[in-house]
Length: 237
Image 1 (spheres, rainbow, N blue to C red):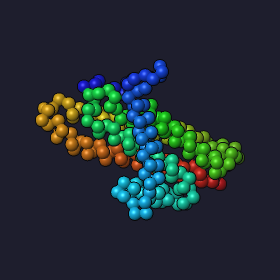
Image 2: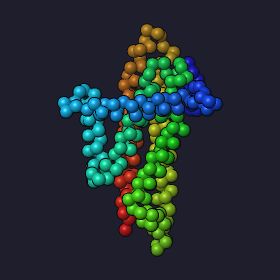
Image 3: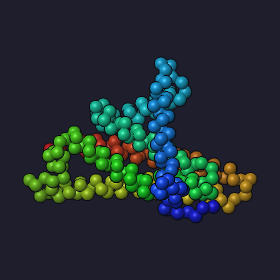
Image 4: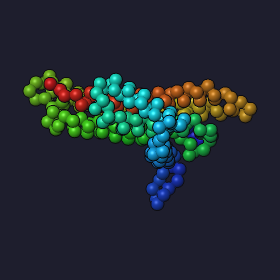
């Protein structure tokens, strides 16, 4: 069994650039989704097949959910592509920990159990949310949310709100990382030290639990981005 470590391991090098095990999977998954999804809808049929029908159901359900948060189809259409991409990418990344051999081969490591990945994802998401807020509100109203020099109390509240943008990065990344890393450790511990005849039976309940956790964490992360976007693009008085 591989040593349980918070840090990702270097899987291989390309041109002197180290590729970690989590980095390998996120590149593979991102490329796979970028190829798979357009190929499905490029061959879309009026009477959808099973895969097209499933994807359309997922997309429409999440679209309606975003509508319930933004209360505006125009706003939903702006944030939906990014939020939906986050959901699919994180969910796919979380499922890596369910692959048999976790903890046996160093290449098997769920990207979401790497703090570097979750921090980068959270930072990118909050940067995009604030970019959209700046785009929708304009420079002066956007900065006015944080720096209101007409009232010292509102200025203090604005500075706290600015600090909140950074704490959101920490909370988003730590929530995703903590849940997935803990789940990965649990699966490794449960899958080792048992008789070979029970190796595929004992972990089943935990695999089911981690499948649910992986889905929920992807949904929560992407949903929070929609919530943050909705509040960030509201004009302040």
